[in-house]
Image 1: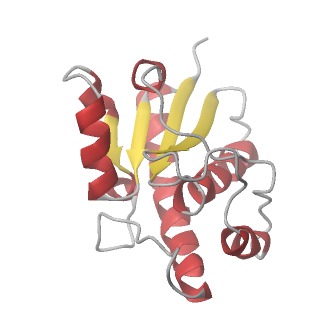
Image 2: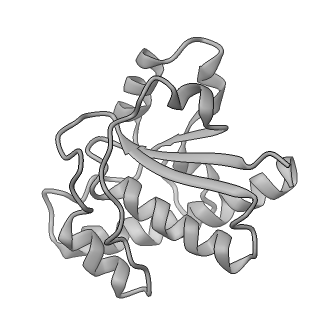
Image 3: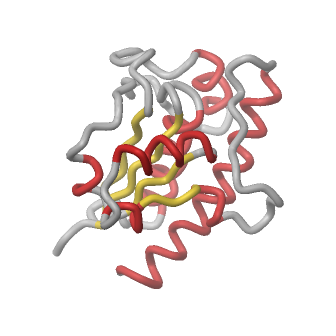
Length: 159
């Protein structure tokens, strides 16, 4: 049985995409689907390759029972476009970068993550890096909502 594979992508892979990875991993695990869904995250830029998630992202996640400390930032690789069923950008700028790096056939796998959200009126997860702690909490709220919608979509279409 082939696993469904999901790659979350932001710019540096230290705030939004590792948060999305952690939230989605916990949700998938709680539903007993960890053996059926492969989850990873990456950045469109190499600014933070090898680094753990931002300490503020980790602190906000810990407040909700998530441990992001074992994750390490990596940059999106050419192979990712053929390996992942879903490549989910956190915002339009990263979506554009992903489209530029992919072939026309691969673009059908690339989406904005917030398209799976039901309680938010935006299609972008804002970058909390230059703001205060409340931005990291907002990112978690948004990501938790979109993660539920994504899992429902995967259940309907793949499981």
